[in-house]
Image 1: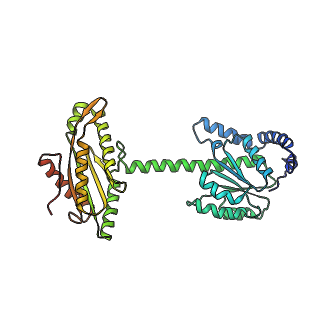
Image 2 (image 1 turned 120 degrees about the vertical axis):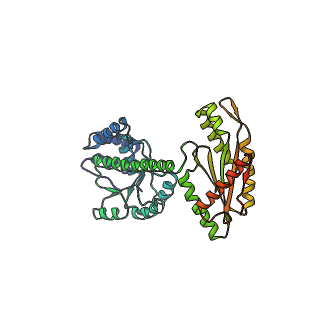
Image 3 (image 1 turned 135 degrees about the vertical axis):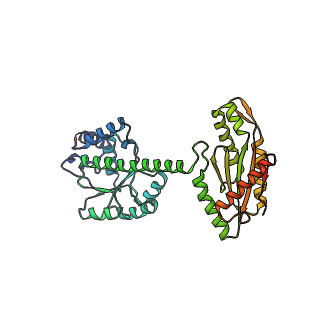
Length: 359
């Protein structure tokens, strides 16, 4: 990648010059970057956006890819002059994909024409990593005929040689802003999805997620002639604790119960808080109903141990109704209904125990 421009006529000596000459040129270039059309707006735009609490593109992770070390250094100085703080580089295009896997760059400045492996081949490799189809690539080309080709190959944008500093900084800023905004929106969407599928107090699954997990577990058991089970739990004495100690203590107790339940079941099982002091556990891919009854015994023992909350020693127990597929129901509604009926029997017969529906 060669760089020459009426805007950057003093860049030509960079090819094959000593470090001192390069440093002097870079200083001059920094001045060009500050005064170039739109460059000041882009940098000032970043600062203004940051002061308003929006995205700071200058913190975006950038990778420069060029087989000429002097041109890599040039771009590094351009970006540094605009305040970008996380800039990496390589002169070996064959290392780009592995570097991107390790560091997940927000933007890759990619020279199109390089010996051994060109920019088009690099983008093919990047597509295997960026499975959502968004390549964070700003292509750099001296061939006007490549403009359409690089966009068709997946690049988000391109700059042409001779390089214009102001245009380069503007395009870098714009692409980083889009990339980082998408990342924030994705994180926000994940948080919303998590809230939609989880209990806000305990972080356990909510009824919506439980229904999905039950449907999958039953379908798997039906397909493989297997067994799965549902445990319906109700805390004995929770209302008295909540009324006498206050809702703060009650909420802390529910969180502690959730933690103990998660420590008992396997990772593939689902623990759900239906609301209040009611919980449901879906045990998937079990060998027999006997596994479910042993799990119920463990839960009863674990939850009956005292809780120390804000200096208070609190004791509660739990009653459990147990149902299993296919013995007590062929769908989620049937299993929950059977487990609920068994829970009622456990309560009626003295609590702190589990019951199984009569077949």
